Image 1 (cartoon, rainbow, N blue to C red):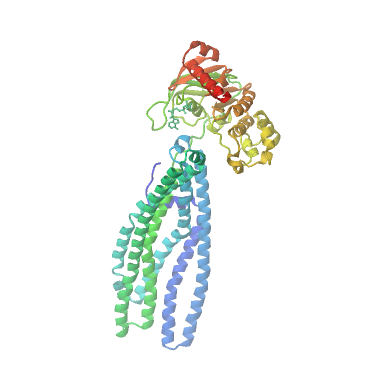
Image 2 (image 1 turned 120 degrees about the vertical axis):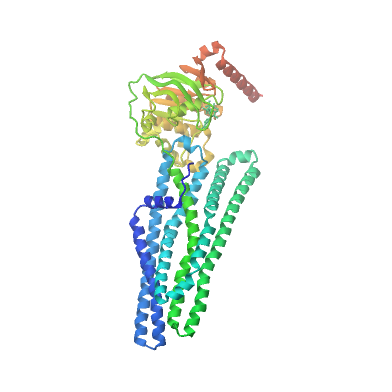
Length: 588
Ligand SMILES: Nc1ncnc2c1ncn2[C@@H]1O[C@H](COP(=O)(O)OP(=O)(O)OP(=O)(O)O)[C@@H](O)[C@H]1O
């Protein structure tokens, strides 16, 4: 992913994205008033002590009322500060989450393939959480602390400019040292976030690959991989914590040095009568308000740096260019040629070798065309290009007689029903999963689509029928059942072009027969491009295109190709022989 650096740049982007900025502005005003109250306390304290020492009760009580009033004000304003900043952070983070989720759904497949989904999840959880803390706490602190320090500095100068100068002389040098100490935190934090992303990816692998991991006894290997990833995060976290501890100790030094100077010089002046005890106590109290904010600033700065690293990682996602929008909404009806490839060549991003080489073929309306060929020959790539997943091919692809580049991608996909070999069902009810084929479909339409897909019967045998949650069932649905639900989804869509990418390859013979029966019913009077490994399933195709290394090497009907005695017949007879061996083994 492309990286944009700069904490300030990221900070400004957060402010721009977060809605209801007025919440932030009001919080800042509240914070300014709170800083004023802090300084006011010191003034009141000086008045109280001096009035007590001079035994002037009426002045003493006047100051006391002001103290009580200020405390009430401070309580109300602190409540407001936390409430408003919390609301600002909640609304902002919700917007950020929605923006990223929407952006992810609009990304081209080619970009999504570059990162592990675990890394995206890590960004959407760990990094978003950091932004939430930043927006609700750090952002206010980083405004409040310098303001409080500035106010205290002004009042201290008013009380005794000489003592202020002497006590704060070393602060800028110490502060600079702390800033230098906080510098490597960006690097450590970036490393930690990236390593957390790797841990998330392994957790995901462990969950999704649980079956294989058990079958192949990979538990120990996965455990080792996970432990090593966790150990790496510990290393980064340790480096970060070490730097943080160093920074905190240094910050403490910033707050202690001025006090030491103040006690020595101020005490001496009180003894000599050059300063009243009230002034010295007010001075010391106020000094606290100067040194404390300054001492926490380097830590806060380190915090901001790590938070901005998290923001940068989120903006990396938002900066990936989404799939192209626009294009035209063409009609599919009345077009005789449904698919046309003219000298199409294509290579995946970052891969030198071409997957498709000057490929040309045509599919007419109503034809059933099969793509066969050795593994890796480029069959699925053809389907992916037709769905508009990758557009950086050379040559020309036409769908319903219009150039793919001219099509609006949503409109193009409206005209295509797609059934892939990897059936993905959303963790919702079966009814909803079929419904995604046509969102406005009635329940009757859903049921009739399930009947065409040979799925109705098994769905009705489930306890909750169409309302059965697929997520709850998890792996309890068989591969064939899942495939039939995905066929029902495609049936419901009722698009004029049907793309089938090895829809039965992962199934056993019984399931395959049921799915094949459903497909045969569904394929009638439709234009179909089917990729098949089991060549027996495409014997009846109008035309078979044999692909090898991204080129069409043979073309014809099943009988014609067998007679020809080329690659197709080799593949076919090899498969027949394998199936015979398997059948014989089963009989024995
Ligand atoms: N997203 C991708 N990025 C990079 N290379 C890819 C990608 N998808 C596929 N390939 C490569 O492109 C080539 C063609 O893959 P494709 O999936 O189109 O073949 P196929 O004929 O459908 O294979 P199979 O029959 O095994 O499914 C292969 O070498 C594959 O490794």
